[in-house]
Image (cartoon, rainbow, N blue to C red; front, side, top):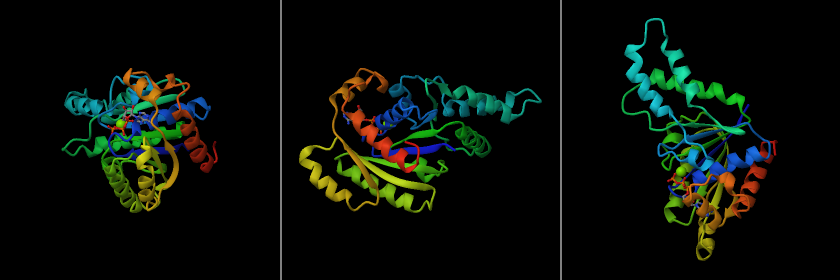
Length: 255
Ligand SMILES: Nc1ncnc2c1ncn2[C@@H]1O[C@H](COP(=O)(O)OP(=O)(O)OP(=O)(O)O)[C@@H](O)[C@H]1O
Ligand SMILES: [Mg+2]
């Protein structure tokens, strides 16, 4: 069964970068195949991984709702949806990517959403790891669309609101009774003068602190130039990504 890692935290804290680097590192270590899921409606995991997704699950949902009434007799809705879902998986070297796109909208499309959920669940056993880049809010986690998470990583920077986000995630996941196996935190881009104060605050949280990732100019330049994370061969941040996979993989008995 695939091991899952979900990355969460305040907007701009570094979730997508971290998720992309984790996917890349797992592939590089030969720990794939990896399924990368971009669960942020403002999708950018594909860009960081060097893929431009042609279609999102949100696009498919819209398309199905439009086409449903025009389906020829005898074509079951489920098989139409399943064909569409297969088209959504973008294949790359060592990993596949699914982009969720826009949310489920105001209407109740329960049967369609259930089909999509079931498809994602059926898909995961074909992978060794699933890495989920979440949106800044907690909607994805709180709506419980994520069934089971082995490792939740909360990214925290030195914006005080980032600490409040982490507190909310802690409270929310306290209620999730065993559906999240391990909770970790990673600090990112903490300025030296803020470090002591930030670490003091974080000591009250019940997340295991894996590492403190410094600001990395090479990383910022690569993102600015729209380069995928695979182009970062000598960046400082790679050592920290190794530490995260060693820790999480080790606790899952796979690294
Ligand atoms: N350690 C780092 N060193 C340098 N730049 C970084 C670092 N971590 C993140 N960044 C930069 O910070 C910005 C925000 O990162 P990212 O997009 O990963 O955050 P996010 O949490 O996914 O944001 P959002 O909530 O908007 O999706 C990016 O421009 C990224 O290049
Ligand atoms: Mg992001």
